[in-house]
Length: 236
Image (tube, rainbow, N blue to C red; front, side, top):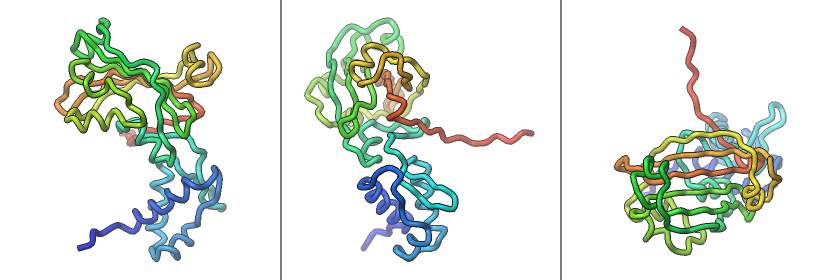
């Protein structure tokens, strides 16, 4: 028996493959062209394209058509997604440069938030197609992750390694702010000191609700975007 694949999904995946091969601002097929190519209704074609608009992969210009969006990584603030998965969804190749990988005694804040006296620290420059996007410091309870992460990580996703060992990053809270790049940021990200960065600090819990990862990610604003899903509350 063949699994049913929705037509909008077929269109969406086809467009993702094309977008990965095109330059920013390149035109994409119109709704009517997609209808003819895939044999679907205009509503189905428009729905597939709208999903890509919401992800920031394409943009529409009324009266002109649909175009490839500038290649800036993007995700929604309400959804935990590993950096590696974010980049792959953008058609980019994720990689990391490890700056520090070590065990040490937890400081007061780490002890309070991670419920541990010893932590494992992983500091990395996160890259997309070889371009630095973020400088990330992740801190974990050492007893839970040291054997998993004290190795050459290469292009492996830490989320995937943890989940594969039964420690699943599940939920968390993040605080986001704009901050000026420090000298260390400038060194690793290839930006000027003082350049604005998007800084996200988050605490992630595992499937049992136990604190698992305390992370600070310092993103180059011109290379990374953060979308927000929201509901509109009407006045009463």
